[in-house]
Length: 348
Ligand SMILES: [Zn+2]
Image (cartoon, helix red, strand yellow):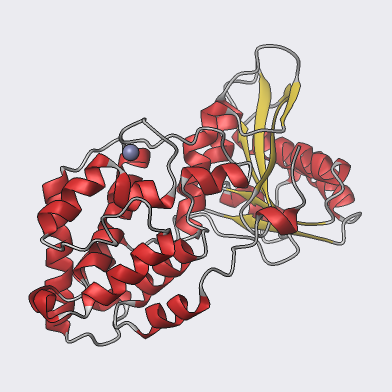
């Protein structure tokens, strides 16, 4: 059973004084946001994702020994321990597995300003950041980064930042941030109060039924369900997309959602529905979609890149073994990683 949303999705307040100290530390705004998420317990780590019912697979993806909590990931996993040990930052709080996460982060912020580390301003913070990046690289790209490289990167970040003179910087002024910055290829949260439904249709031939997949997420990016459906035979790709949009729209209505963003990577279909393009042979599809759309409080048709619609694409292309419709209350295994990826992009 899902817990009430207001309990599971709100970040905790965390330690306010510590957060204030963190905001005053001269680091790039991207790192401020990362630390804020970390302190608010809202990074998509195993424990937090489980709390939000996004996954039940909570083990650390590096050692598979224990639950991936923030403390484990950033301090207690053997991989992290090696980095801290080699960093030369000997600090009894950072190294203490019995200290709370807040105490350890506070120690990171304090050590950062010590004279001993003057050549590496804020190195502990850069280590945290690099640990997070490498963890995501491991999970989403299945690429392992040697721990000593991580330490090298963190020192490099610290140096680069010091050379810039700790001035506020935009993404464009930092080489590594520019490389890593997310483009419009990422998935975005819907506006407050809206449900976003990413839809995709699949067409193989006019002899086969068109199939569809869609994924529902709320304005916190929380998974609300996904579906796969087999429709009627269609003549071309565009009709398969329109059929998918119609089935998703009807399903959203049935689920009781009244303000939705229907998102597809088929520009043509979206332009037709926005009245920006004509498509006479698909008139029946368009008429049906519009008829359903008028019943809602608000329906917006949005077009995204394929990269931002991968979850729906995957579902549309995955065959149903039995029946012609399936609703996934829990995240289907086939899209666990893709969904996680969208979630991480949105929350960083
Ligand atoms: Zn581990």
